[in-house]
Length: 241
Ligand code: NAP
Image 1 (cartoon, rainbow, N blue to C red):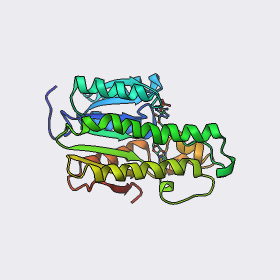
Image 2: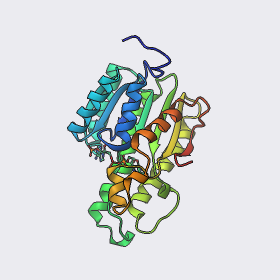
Image 3: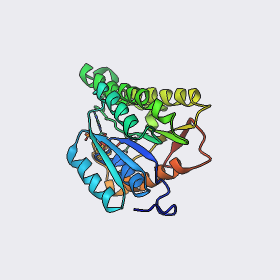
Image 4: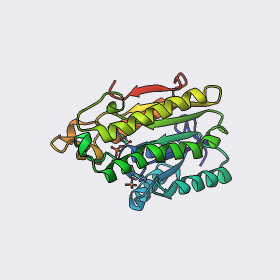
């Protein structure tokens, strides 16, 4: 298929999205694929990835599915090596996969739950960044997007476990932004705000999902941020604004 810069502005770009099997990650991967990027879609649920693949194909795009638990850290390293062999670069990283854990007083969190939060939301993203950094450095114009939350910078009672991991993630992203200042990579932290997904429904079971923006709506905003030539590296973007 020939690329039309109007409809396929991301043609020739390689984009990796974690948590691409549902929710915001799925919608972002779909939007990136429709915009012409070659999508590398990472998550554990094969059914969700296959559905995404069908949608991307239907829009004239192309995806590579990577069924992987991001706490398989060696698996992340192997994925980095495969991407290097196949494409030699990464243009867009969307570190989106995350877990909410249990909403409970910080002192009541079970050690196992605490560990899962740290493993998935923080350590996996550091290992991912560590594996993808050499690839991002090969891009002419790279973006690294990290999905956080308002609680990453503003404490909220009972949300401590999740919030602590998002605070750590934000510090990692800001540190990386400083360390890549002289490279072609721009880093951005995105707070999607309340979005109609499974995670939000778990966090706010009494809420009417119809009152929330859809993942597709948020994905379009993320796509605009990625394509913004004036994006300042290290910025925090709140999609509610
Ligand atoms: P979601 O619907 O629960 O989807 C989470 C995604 O992460 C799924 O695709 C899931 O895939 C993946 N994931 C979780 N654990 C994983 C693991 N160990 N390995 C690989 N993939 C894993 O969540 P969402 O609402 O779309 O949230 C996306 C991001 O936005 C998260 O970082 C979240 O913290 C942030 N956020 C969301 C909201 C909101 O209102 N929705 C608000 C603020 C921030 P598998 O289960 O298939 O592996």
